[in-house]
Image 1: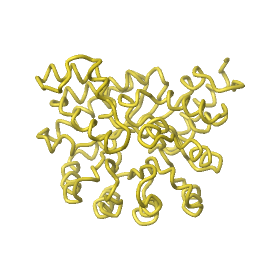
Image 2 (image 1 turned 135 degrees about the horizontal axis):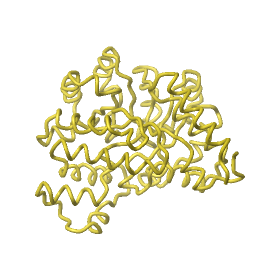
Image 3 (image 1 turned 30 degrees about the horizontal axis):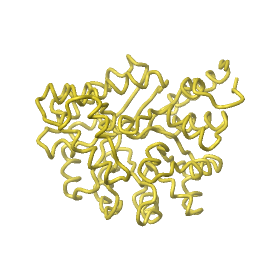
Image 4 (image 1 turned 90 degrees about the vertical axis):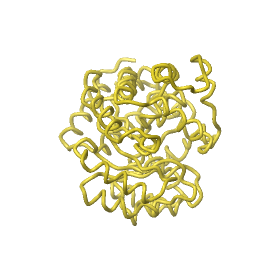
Amino acid sequence: MLPTNVTKEFVRGIPKAELHLHLEGTLEPELKLALAEKNKIDIGQTTIEEVRKSYQFDSLPSFLNVYYPAMNVLQDEEDFYQLAMAYFEKVQAHNVRYAELFFDPQAHTTRGVPFETVINGYYRAIQESEKFGVQSALIMCFLRDMSAESAEETFEQALPYQDKILGIGLDSDEKGNPPSKFAAVFKKAKAAGFKITMHCDIDQENSIEHIRQVIEDIQVDRIDHGTNIVESPALTQYAKEHGIGLTSCPVSNGFVVDDMKGKEILQLLHEGVKVTVNSDDPAYFQSYISDDYFTLSEAYGLTPEDIVTLAKNSFEIAWIPAEQKATYLKAVDDFVADFVG
């Protein structure tokens, strides 16, 4: 039964899906240092504590300035496999039952790592994730601060591996890089049968116009972040009526703009929009998915009923068959029925 208050035990135990998780953002200091030593790469740090201290930022651009150089330690297929497997092992304790995971091939191909090395390493982990109780799939993202032509080239590289990629996304620095810049390649992705999503980061220039573009012009299946949508009642209503889910990341929000956007998340939740809670880049924000749930709850007074709705939303907007959704939703109900706090 539901506890009277939200507890860490309840939040950790409830079955959940993670739909906004960058695999490159799960690079914990211990693994980064180990891979640097293995691949003989000078990262400028020699201890775990030094690596940890290097994970410092106060905005999206400053975060990306730390984030992308860290990827240099990822060199061969085994490195990508280990990175993904470390995530699955970590979230076993958070009762993540299903995950759709972002990866950024351009961040690797531009430094000489073949596309096939990246996808094969990650996909091998996807195939083995169930040993940790997690079913999973991959979402390939384009880097929006690179050219549309580069995105097109990456899309062509991905086509031979389409059976290993569930969806296509868009991430990185949004400033000056509106969704419309990539409309043509996303049209191709939809035609090829991929599910599509795009980041609409919080408090960006032209936030509402960008959200309008992804909803009306590009017609995405989901929006990543996107809580600025509350500024437009019309777009909010459209998202609700069409079941367009939002994958919010409250702890990472608090790092890049000093605001978790909890008020907006709760407004969307209570208005019936399929908003979810996710961890984004947990190694950098030191907050995995249950930590995000609980931190948001503590700061904004979420109820146990809110936690249940968030967990159910995560399965309802996942790109999985209806029968599989029903199984996961029943698991949530069963957990609640059996919970003794």
